[in-house]
Amino acid sequence: MGYSQFARVPNHYAGPIIQRIKEFRRQTGRRSLVPTLLEVGDLQLVVPRHFGFCFGVERAIHMAFSVLDETPARPTYMVSEIIHNHLVNDELRRRGVRFVFDSQGRRQVPETDIHATDAVLIPAFGTTLDIEASLQRSGIDTSTPAFRARYDTTCPFVAKVWRRGELLGREGYTIIIHGKFNHEETRATQSHIQQFAPTLVVFDCSEAQVVAAYIRGQLDSQTLADRFAARWSPGFVPERDLARVAVVNQTTMLAEETRRVVRILRAAMGARYGPEQLEYRCADTSDTLCYATNQNQNATRAVLRANAALAVIVGGYNSSNTAHLAEICSRAMPSYLVAHCDEILSRQAIRHFDLRCHQPVVSRDWLPAAMPLRLVVTSGASCPDILMDQVIERIFAVCGYGRAAVDAGLESLRLLDE
Image 1 (cartoon, one colour):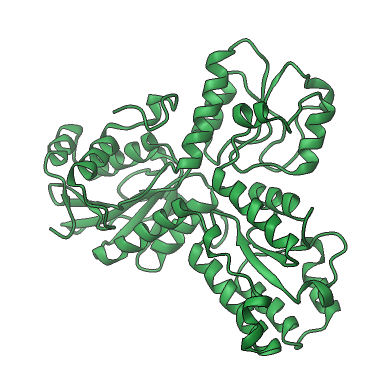
Image 2 (image 1 turned 60 degrees about the horizontal axis):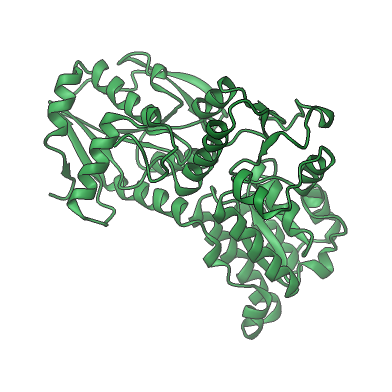
């Protein structure tokens, strides 16, 4: 039970509590989004149907540790953090992996330090063509099938967005990327697609409304340029390049928000060109949304009906998909994004990442004193199960329940609708 579907994902990333919950779900055979209930005394934890490592993350970790296991003495580099989780990245560093760029995009390893005989891995987010060109100058041929199969850990769903963007670009569409402009994945996506199409990055629906206003003729091109020129591709001409558009996304963004961005732009195209031209002016790209991101987000929405007092979301502070899970939970209850169990300081205090001010804060009296008490606990796609496991155990501990009580509760897991 210590390994996932990928044999080389280290078993210390698994956790006994989470493994029991996953095994229980497999035994039920239920594919619905009904969450699991773990009850210990007067404390109930609600766990969504889907959480934690997605396929792309497991695949990336499997590939990285395979390289390290098979050629342990070979100098090994990672272009940047393989995923947004400190536990995994710190272990890679301990195993001798050097990161070419830090989390802020600053180069740490010169081109001249990397050689053709070294192992260099591309992270799950993918990387830009400029960085690939730099690796080529160091003697690393990133274009060969052998390199792609062994060292390129780019998530297949990210690569799917690139391929779809290329096809749409060749058909004459401008690609609108719904994402965070400075995120590694968004930078990689824009870099790959702008070979074939004009591109523009929008962060949210309010920015999509600005683009829509231009399409409707309500905004002049200079005002649009003042807002977006730093985020569109070289040579972008609004008058020409916003006549036909297709929306793809950074796969960790809220899928529901991507759909809203599409609706905003389709409405603008319909208003300007008429409904009969709508399909020509705005392509259908719903097939590019990442199923794993959708699963986790939909499962998180399902727990909002659990009447819980609060939610604890486990994952990296710089993890986009984890932040979106916290955002979903915050619509229904107080929500706390923590990186690990040590941030649960006591029953009275918790250190967590505040999505509004984008920095860690300490909240007091976060855990209600009144019992019985029901909480939601989930984790982002880049969060190892062991971190969520330790957070669950810590929550029970500050409420006065030891491991023996938790183990007894695991014997009577049930679905919330039972």
